[in-house]
Image (tube, rainbow, N blue to C red; front, side, top):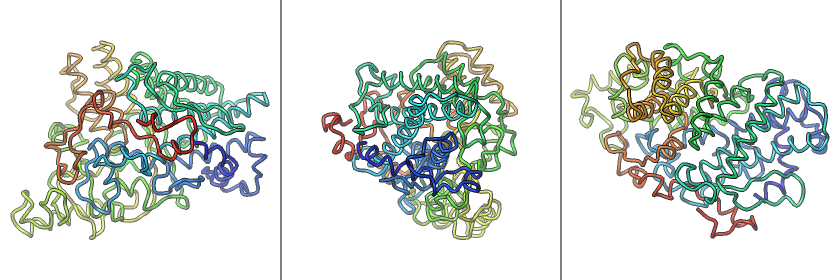
Length: 537
């Protein structure tokens, strides 16, 4: 982390120049702003924040950054790949092979371990610069500055949440007061050194203080410019996630309920439209990807969408868990987002059944096999170079299918908040309260939904786990879900190939398996005098 603060000058300039707001990009000559003036006005503070908004999805311009793993566009699908929830049907071009085989996050020298760590600390350094500058200058905090400070504190809380849930043992699985967490960095002045690992409890206390401070500022803030900016609803959503991960059920339920206000659940046509825009009614927080700033072949849709015209998807359509699919009622429209009878046209398919009707158990002649493939291609707008596979998902669809055009990245939806609220109430023993929340949510997806069928805490929790998988598939929550629930991995019957998945096919539960914790980057151990090899996870 030492290198982050030594390059703080470059960090400010990179963030300012790469600001993501369309308005600022069109009206502000950001290249002309001197580093010494970066925090001199609220307008320039906004540019710092706009750089963070862009960092959430775009190619990394930061010192030491890697554009192959920049922003949330990579880490959202990664957290579903690690657990085997987002199933790869074939090796494809190799993207995330190490993640699904559990050789990446267990390797201290891997780019995934390094970039997740350093990018989140870049967010923290930027937030600190704004927070500390305002504390030093003591200006009048008007609506505009309240918005800026609310976002800065929320980004800092979110960043520590991303770090503590990856690089430390789960809060519910350890003694948080003594279990090592991550360094808490608050300063922005010399000597620019990082610190030792704080305890898990201390990091949670800092996150909670930050998100509560953010909410105070948002209470008197101007409205967000768009959904790329953190709003008061998004801040409540972050608070709900933090509380859920530590088992603070009451706070999680209350915050989740506040977060979803004003963001109505999607109707069938919108839910099935592809999740490619943050204009959907449920989206609380999301990145509006600007064409000139997309990562194209490193974008979220490149990694996850079956229609994207890239080698990752043409040769490796992503699969939905077969056992989970079979549990979805026919009255639930989300079942349409999976194609169980899509022919396996890929001769390199990991299950060894691809290439033609002879090896595909769903077809007994060539005409039916290729007609089925043609129907999928034409229905969803893929190219003739795209392969299909049984149980492939069609949840994430491009606005312009069969191209490399960018689409938005969704970070938070009200559907997640309903499910957080339901889980928290279930864990508190509020069975009727959980049923009521689930009924509102479930009936929006399933015309025959009846939450009263789940009348015990155990039944409700199993149902909520099912609902989180079906609803939030591909949105990056399964890793923290497995840790919170202390559930291991067993992909038997899922459709994943044991030969291909190797170590990732089966893993013991997190409470007895330290491999669930990401390795601290070796670069951090080598450069931080306060962290040594003995501190490694």
